[in-house]
Image 1: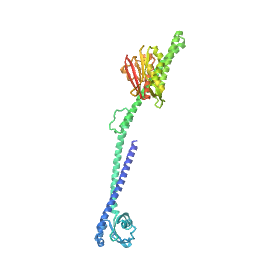
Image 2: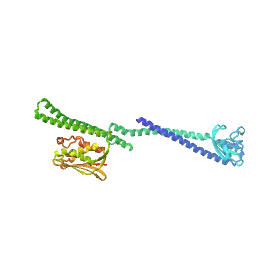
Image 3: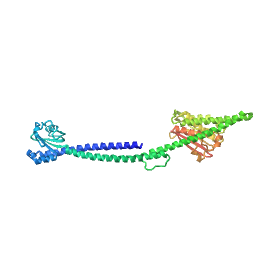
Length: 439
């Protein structure tokens, strides 16, 4: 991975340097070419007033050659009257040369081309004279391209140097970029790491949090599996024991009836555990989609209390429903399950002769469900964990009352499925109030 990133960084750096160098050279060439044209235009303006005999003097011709300049005088019909570099007699008609044609039409013209006379690329500037003839000044590209070649050598040397520096920097930056990830891979639970780019710090933190969540999930599943095994083992052991006693013939008719009743109780407990475990598994499935429909929370609560009326009467507990009709968008089956778990818990852990009050009403534009009892309450130190699976404040007392330890865990999951808010207010010996606010 590091090698691939290094190669990519180096390739990008090399591409950027080469493109920049080429663009710079092209820009330099255009600027330099325009400067040369300005220079030879100035030469033309200086030379124009001078007599041709001045041009033909040996010393002046020598100076022109040293400066790489070439002077040509062309008649209006294109005939060459004078050229400082070549015998005019062997030169062809120049009327169709681009710079001459342009000068005859507009007064001045320019061109860059290969010169058959000088065997060099030459930059030409031509100016039409008052006589109708054209004065042309040319500058051989030898001097221009010599400078260009020198600049190219310098640019290439700098490009190689820059690429080497960029390659070294890319190696260091890649190492610094990958190092936190490598450390995280070898030590996911490690405390904060130094020298982390601000841009990848959230990424590192997310990976660490996901790792912690995975560990926590694994721990929760492990604990859940252990708890399920333990909870299932108790009723199964009782069923097996009583069945063995009945089957061996040791128990008389009276004991057999009592043992059969205990088997029935253990079987009911076993079925309740299995049903609650299946419900939790269904709610845990992230891909599980639940249909929603308008549900009247007040009517659903009324139906739940009617179903639990017999259980409440057996314990001398009064059930009361308050509020008014209020609609929510929810899954009807899950809402019925939520109400059943809350109300049955309120009855199960209540005092004889106590009261359970269910309220469904609108409050500040939101639907609120409150289940309040006058039961044994929950001590402060247990309230944060009361919604965990199989968590019981008093295990022996809970089992005596028939609880599976999964009811409130199911409630928590159903609340989460409906994006609602759950809160608990309880005091030992004075009762419990659970409040759910739906959006």
